[in-house]
Length: 413
Image (tube, rainbow, N blue to C red; front, side, top):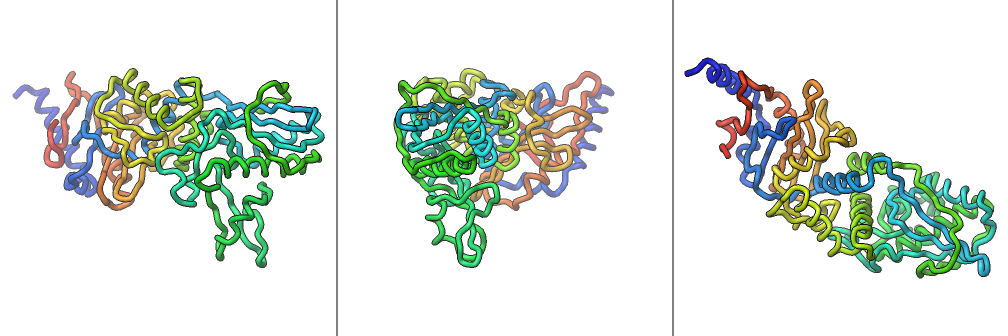
């Protein structure tokens, strides 16, 4: 046997010895796949890498890549305001901005006042960017914050946070005024503070936005009436354009850290609306994602139904996630560090546990994807990633470690 092959065999055996209990437990699973690749995309270790699985929230990697590729990390969402001075109507044209939180609305209201706004009898909402009464898979099914429906105008991720003090309903956030719509959830409060979404109907989310805007304008000394109407801006003059203080990169960093479904769905809806120049809708989201991924990566045998990963009908393979991560490298630092030198996005649903990202070794970022579509211990994916990090990857006398799996654990592909 040539010496160079003996050297490689010694490396192979020593690497296999690093495999611990997590990898052994993974090898016994019946519905799972795994892939780790080198910097150039070469396969290092794989098992069922081309089998499609439900990706859960690792789908957000696709949404983030699409948004960053289209707009760039320095992009800032803008919301336009039009003023009809005849009847003191303030029109708000929804842009799908996913980060109009209370702190941003406060700045927005202050700027409107500085631009000369003194009186508003009616707040008019232009939500034409999104198709009316439109929902995406998994949204609006419960009152949980992560099920919030998307809307062209949204405040605080379409969630409400309230509590009771001595029997009185108050806002659970010092920066957020209590509104009439928020107060309507009082009956659901028992002992602990309650955070819920605004409900399954996007119209309710828009009503909450209007109420919060009115509250912040009032705090700035603007006289605000109770009128709220919906329609489409036509001949009114542009009064003020608000640029969100957060960049797209900052938004995506937060989306990856907290796995914000609402944020992901907002991004993909706005992207599809820009692509097809019509109100965003469920069918266009799926078409946009499929067309783009097929064109760029030449993928087949995959299904994507939403941008957040809430649909159990989504299907991706570890190989496809790894290819996506290769393209995501310019923005790799937006992923959270879930373990030392492991930057990744996780995905969790009942009976589904996934993890995809990068293992960093001496400034080399190696992409990996772990997909388990069966009940497993919660931290198993992290332990697998930690054990993968121990498998030293190197070239031996010109031989690239490609498709050399740990034989006693995984099938050769």
